[in-house]
Length: 283
Image (cartoon, rainbow, N blue to C red; front, side, top):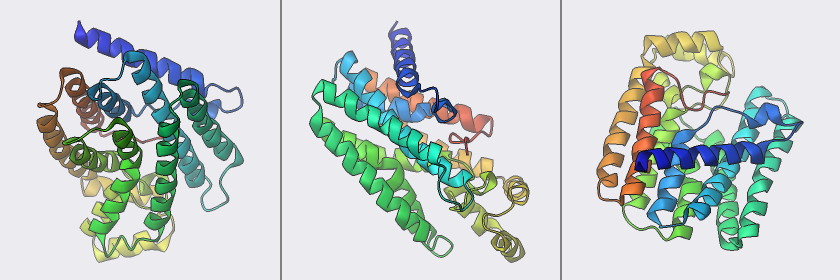
């Protein structure tokens, strides 16, 4: 019964997100692949803090709208292939983000609006840092910046919810999972490498690295052949399996609802890597 109620609540949240994002001129950007691992982690945090269902629904929806706004901006930049970002993507991202202001303001959750706004600023700063990072010489530092991008919204929410240990550690580890689960960015036309691409770079031969460097971004067909050669899907699965092992250990000591949410984070990743499908495959 608990599981049925839980799934029904999440279905209601997803319907509400779709409604909030619905705009006749922006539907290209609104209806995307669901990042359900992000939804479930946010839900688990609100459940752990003891928020009511109505409040949980509002907060989870708001955080996802912020996430989607940031994501659309980035997708628009990638699709532009070095040109100025697509105006529709910028407008769509701003539209989705603006919805969270209105939703939380109606609830009187002004401090949370401020926390999320600061997180958006931090994410933008981290993305600038990522674009300039010497990832080919400092893979660990680059990984840390990527994780910071993935965790900023969660840490903002954690502070607002006053969640204590193990949440800070859990969020950091989950951030590694989100960064890995994005899959190969080069193979989808991105200029900035993902963690999968950094793994590929260090696995490749000097000749293959030279070929990758010839074009920016590297040709998708060439990169995808290298993904297969170096079994990047297997590497991704191994990384996510280790993340999920630790998340489940921490979740075992949590209230039942929060633990169920963490389990669904891991289950979503597992279903994606079982089929070799990156979570953020929209690019």
